Length: 488
Image (cartoon, rainbow, N blue to C red; front, side, top):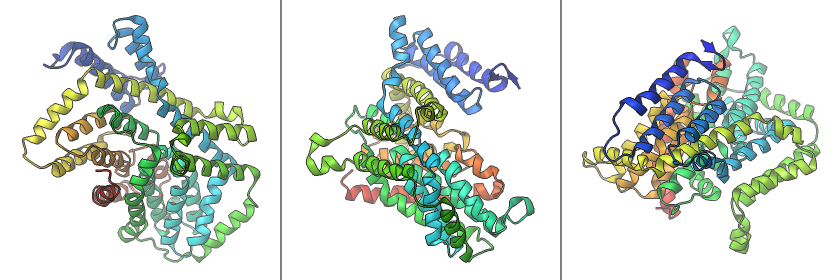
């Protein structure tokens, strides 16, 4: 039921929650009135996002307006307005926005499809080989596709469907289990893992970086290269498991696929030689990876270090100069501008909840409850991460989940004695890996689930299995890897 631009039930729920916290629930000891009122606005915002009361960008505009008008961050009207807009000055937000625009070049030039068909032409003799080809395709394009939905649902999924159709596997005629069921599960379960491997692989990752820096007083500032290096080994191990585990749990009826390579080669033949636009995309792709990884600074000294967001602007500039993307393409990339707006609002609210002391109050409360159990920090961290991870069953947005819970859980872990970088990297991985659980966990899931190849029961079963595997690998293999790297 809608009235104007809002859904009535989610909107009413959001308003009631806001008013209850603001006017009815007493302000706890140790919490300022302003912090409690900002929490009311924050809870209302998150509730509206979860319930999809309005598009997330519209909710963000409303949140900015309420923060400015209520003066919960600043008694001065002009100061409150400045605070409400402060999120737009965060460079990480612009990194993601610009990277989303750059990733448009993958689909426009056809390079994304070429990468997918190329890997299938190499590994497509067997069904499990196609699974690994899809995984490698995701991995290759992940660093420059901050929309995991665009990557898994917009680029890889159509390739997966065309392969399944070529083998006569269609959900409409009851032949999904031939091969399409297997490929759809691999298609999806790879997506959370690649999202966990790079700051620029999914939009909410910079939120994690921001929260960690805020909690440690900028003592820990995770760079693009640090994140990629830390996630390299656990990510590759998780990727190696997915096609095999799905194969064991839900074996496809078709095991050998000699025609897949032929099909992929025919698609590549149709595409012809690499176009100028594709070659420019490859150059920009390589340039971004080299500069984001900080290789010039490693080779020639800190004088050659570059800001990650500045590098993204450089990449987009090259695409505009060469005509791979036009200014109209930039203006039409609605998801990028939408992301910049809602990201700015959520980062602003989360930042001021921290500044006003609410995050430290809540984390202290949580830390004291866990500390009473008498466990050492490793087990305490495991409890925190497991609660944080499986709470995603109640969220349809990773952004809402991370914004609502990450900062407090990270602060609680620090108070329990966990090494700051280990804790941050573990929770950072969990923030993407939790997307494996349900058919509504992130934007990619309804696209792939909606194609009809996988039942809800099979989806949740595979999600539960992969959640255990992914968390175990990230915590144990990742933890040992980070120890070797000297991160803790």
